[in-house]
Length: 400
Ligand code: NAI
Image (cartoon, rainbow, N blue to C red):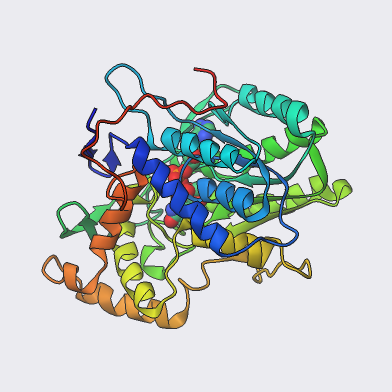
């Protein structure tokens, strides 16, 4: 069939398999262009491996360090009259490329929050790899069913305390408007968001992997966080999602304790704001990202997920002298270029000026839009979108 983008708000309902393959190939080429990561990981589990930072982590490990990778994700293959999800096609593309390069790559599709998927993953590690030396935790989800209690939690993206009013953009139309987001009405919304996006599930994974003996001596584990500028604090860092990130960050010492006897270590890496399926759902943030992209591209410091993950591996997690640079709170910072004073000062200046009329000129809204469509395999150079495309693509390691 001829596959066209079909959007509803910040969601794209269709995805293009050839475009996904091209996007994965582009990421692989970038990693290869940077050369091999010395002392990099060799056997890697990526939880949340099909899109965004998780997919790029998998690519950076595989093609930057010849690592065998197991990827866990929650995606859908094509079914009658329906396209597969972008993450499904990305994973099919990744495995195809990894296998062609002689690299081990297998995937598990299902709810990573469940005990069952944890067990399936452990069984696969035991059977094929024995142990893993890096566990990347890169889940982003709006809900979680607790594996021990069966309680279903839904996260919310809200401020705490006061309503938050600021500018936001509809990135399809380029219309800027004021949006007011009311604060949470009760502490339950905060607790629910922490239950979904906080550190408990990361801890459950590490506990189970350790108990099964599948973590190698000296294992590293990393999860991703975000801080961002003051203008997004009410909706992000000081909002419900920020409370979940605080909880995730507070899990680091707990895991370090758990991993002590293996000489293992856990990290949170604070990453840059980027266009992903998750970030496009947060009000205000897409406008900030459009301005940020403009400023960082002009300065030559712009990065996408793959540049970020390659830098995380090569310059932070696997340095030649083994030292990992941390901030005063013990976090890895690869949002350093985003948070640079000159970058933030310029973004703040443009933030005050930006209107529907000035958007195209002073922001990189076109870049934002293009990256959004790229996430779903659209608008990539080198792809023939007029060609009849088979949407029934298999992820080689997954029975379907
Ligand atoms: P994403 O939406 O691109 O990726 C989420 C991944 O989680 C996908 O592989 C998806 O299949 C998987 N997933 C979701 N629910 C699942 C479930 N129940 N079981 C198994 N897999 C499941 O998200 P993105 O943006 O890459 O986020 C990853 C992490 O990075 C999150 O912790 C996010 O907060 C963080 N981060 C994101 C930033 C951004 O600007 N996008 C900035 C800094 C941190």
